[in-house]
Length: 371
Length: 154
Figure 1: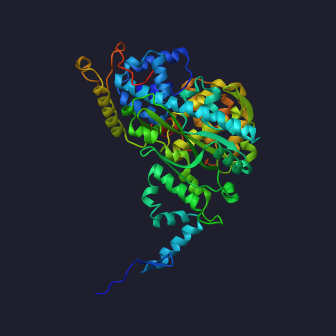
Figure 2: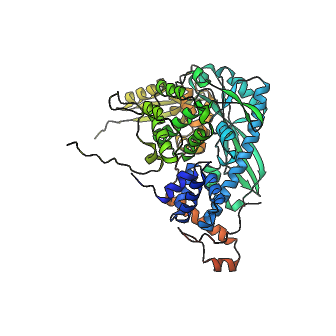
Figure 3: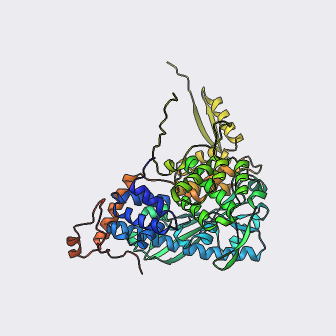
């Protein structure tokens, strides 16, 4: 058994939007004993869980345990993130209305659907962009609809506050071979909730992607329109279980909970190992799905997808660790089917346990010879 | 003593066309390599390496990399699809804009945090600065300590 550090434990608790009372007490107790707050902040920023961490420390009256500048850093980051979330969700409503008016088949993807449906406070789940999926045959129409809404393809530079539009022509070939349309951007202007000099260049350029001048905040809303979930996924599977749900009181097309779980748990694993992108926020996403949508999950369907697309290792390591670390219900017979075995052909994309990778912690199993 | 040239090139401009002549011992190999790149749908790399607008150096840098790739997308390198959409999409997605993952090491972050702390301290009244003994590094602070002035407009 490997014991997590105080900092690791705090982050693994704070990445979830819902915690039992005893877990909240545990978090508060950990916060009092953190010895390396800069490390916690650095990790939280890159894991994209800063608003959640700030929120949990506030709720458990633990912010005072951190040096004041650490609290200020979290508060500023979270306030800017909240501004972006507000802008994103306002835009989400505009886009949904337009797609519905034009009878376009679509559904929300990734954080856009998950945060809105299952997070107690959707703004605690920062999103880099809004994600929709549409039918490939509708992609060109959707592009035109988005142009009418003021969205453009191009590059926005936070340093110069300039937007350089680019022309993107969708061709039958590009739609056949790609999985998404090049992203769209819409610039939203608002009053900055944070003093200009406290908006760090790294936040402007990377983490929050914004510009501030004379207390005016410019926040680009990025929009990714997908036509497939990933390369090689059959379209009937992509659209399996898509349904209408109430998002902020508006009937909206969303992914089924089973597809969300399959996609996000797999993505968490692949992002970590294939792209070295460590997103503890997605660990919180998976936990949220398992707690908020447990009854909606069709486990046989999840297993069928895992077998068909070779994602058993990803699901096994993510779900098994989720059960161990959070106590959330994951049927043992499901884990048993997912578990890679020595008696089968070694599975592709089996990189082992995901937690050491997420925590950047070298983990070596101790082996000894049989006697 | 005469030496054999390994690889060289000359540039000529005629009728708004640039003609690049590659010569030397490795010329054939170099041209074969370029042809292979084109055939594999990576012609945009060739273009990016010679274009003053879409320089390779820019392609290596986050948002600029994305800008270059977007511009390439607009440039429609070929009509027959020999430049795959996927190659360009890699550079166009939002993940590239945000440079996902740990873009900067911990030390750089710690230095940035110190600067942030200094900026906060600039705003504090003199007596508060003296009383607070400067903001601690890596500190386990008392849980009862009074919060400093919020940087966030309420």
